[in-house]
Amino acid sequence: MALLEVKGVSKHFGGVSALSRVSLCVEEREIVGLIGPNGAGKTSFFNCLTGLLKVDEGKILLGRDQRVLSGMSSDRILEAGIARTFQNLRIFRNMTLLENVAIGFHARTRSGLWDAFVRSPRARKEEKMIFDQSRELLRFMGLESFGNEIAANLPYGHQKRLEIARALASSPRLLCLDEPVAGMNPSEKEALAGVIRKIREKNIAVLLIEHDMKVVMPLSDRLVVLDEGEVIAEGRPQDIKNNPRVIQAYLGEG
Amino acid sequence: MERISLKKSNLFKVATVFLPLALIPLFDHNPYHLDLFTTVGIYALLAMGLNVVVGFAGLLNLGYAAFFAIGAYTYALLSLHWHCPFWLGLPIAGLVSMFFGFLIGMPSIRVRGDYLAITTLGFGEIVRIAFNNLDAWTGGPNGLLGIARPKLWVPSFEGGLHFETWSFSVNPAPYGYLVLGLVAGTACLLLRLSDSKFGRALVAIREDELAASCMGIPTLKVKLYAFGVSSFIAGIAGCVFAAKQTIITPDSFDFVLSVLILAMVVLGGLGNLWGAVLGAAVLGTLPELLREFADYRMLVFGLIMILMMIFRPQGILGGQLIQRELDVRHKESADGAS
Image (cartoon, rainbow over all chains, first blue to last red):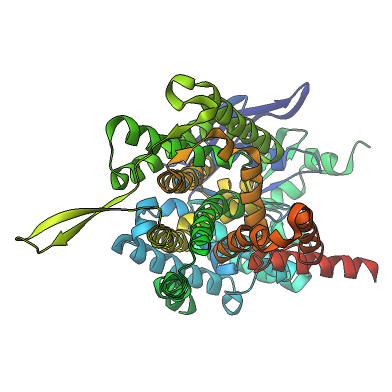
C-alpha cells in the first residue's frame, strides 16, 4: 500500500488546464523526484496536494487508512501528515529561528487558549517539549548556533534549511520540497542532498521538485516527469534519462 | 534557557511597573489628577486590547470603540433594570462584548487589510447609531443615567461580626486602584498569551498567513480568538467606564475614540504591550498638559503626532520586531544603491 496515492487529479484556471489527470504514488521511505520544464505544473501540483488550490477532479489519498485529503484545508492536511516548503522562501522573517520551528508544533500540541492564560502544567510541559525538540531540529539541520537570531538576518542557504526544519517540526509522513537547492553553490547542494537522505532515514518519504539534474538524479529512487500538466514518464532515474519523450519535452521538437 | 527564565518573570515585570503607580493616590490627593489617572488606565486597557488584534495579528480594526460601548451599555442596562452588582456586571459586560466580537469577526475576518478596516469601521458606526436611535432602551442621545457605582463588602466588628456595604463615591481614588488592578491583571495575562503558542501563531499570521496555514495553524480560528480576547477587554473597560461616569451617551463612543486608541497602539509601538500602555499614558495626558494652549491645543497635539511618526515611525518603545524589519529594509536599500 502506497503512502500517498494521487488519482487522476485535474486543475483548470479558466480555459487553461494546469494539471490534467495526474496520477502518481509515493511509497513509505521513498524519495521521488518531480521534474519537468518550466510551467509544467509542478508547483500547481504541490499547491493542490497541500490544499492551497482546490482540486477540480480526482482524489488524493494518504496512508494505510486511505484518508481523502482533497478538499481539506491546508492546516488539516499538515495534521494528516504532509508538510511542505516553498519555491520562494516563506519563512517568518521577523521571528527567531527557534520560534519559526516552534510554529511547526502548533498542530501537534493540545493546549488551548485557557492553558496559555493560566499557564497550566500541560502548557508548560508542551512549551518545554516544543523548544527542546525545536533546538534538536535546528541541530539536525546544522543551524543550532543561530537559534536566537532573527530569520531575516540569515544567509539564503540557511533560510532554506530553516524552512525544512520548520516543516519537519510537524513530524510529517511525507515532506514536499519545492526546489530545495535552488540558488545554492555546489558544496551546499551536496550537503543538502545528504540531509534529504538523512530525512528519509527518519522514516519520512520525500517528494521533491528540482531542476538540478546533478542533484535529483542520484538522490531520487524514482522520477516522475510532468509536461504541460500531464505525467509523461515515470521510472528509475537512469531509464528516464534516455526516455525519448522526456528528451523531447526538455529540448523541444526537432 | 534564556527564554524560560524570561517567562517566569512576567509577574515580576508587571509588578515592578505597576506597584510604584499604586503609590500615586497616597501622595497626590488632587481629584483632577486622580481622575486623569483613572481615564488613562481605561485607555491603557483599550490600547492593550486593540494591540492583540492590530499589533500581534496585524488585523486593522477601526471600530474598536463599538466594543467599549457594548460593554458600557451592557453594564448600564444590567444595573438600571436588574440592579446587577458591578462585580457581576464586569464579566458579563466582557462576555457580551466578546459575543459581538465573534459575531462581527466571523464574517469579516475572512477579508484582509483595508477591507477588514472598512468592515470594522462600518460596525463601529452602526453600533453608535443604533444606541443613538434605540430610544426605548438606551435613552437615545440623552443616554442612560443613574448607573450604580461599585460596592464593596467590608467586614465590621461593631456589634458582632457583620459586613457593611461601602460604595464608591465621587472620590476618584478607589476607581484609580480598580483600574490599576485591571490593567496589571490584563497585562499579566496578555504577556502570558504572547509568550504561548497562540502568541507565536498570531505573529506568524501577521508575517505570512499562507505559510502559517501550511504549517498547521487554523488561521481563521486563531484570528477569531484574537478578536474575542480583544473585544472582551474592551467590554471590561466599558463596564468600568460606565460605573465611573454613572452617565453614558453614544457620543462617548465615536469614531474619534477608535482612532485615538489606534494612535496609542501605533505611538507606543505596534505589537508591544508596554508600548500600548505608554501610548495610552502619553496620549491620555498630553491634551491635559497642553491646556495652556487653549484653543490651539488639538493643533499642537496633532503636530506632535506628525513629528513623532516622521522621526520615530516604529513608536516610542518600538515593537522590537518592527524595528528590526525597518533596519533590514534600510540595509537592503543601501545595498541596492551601492
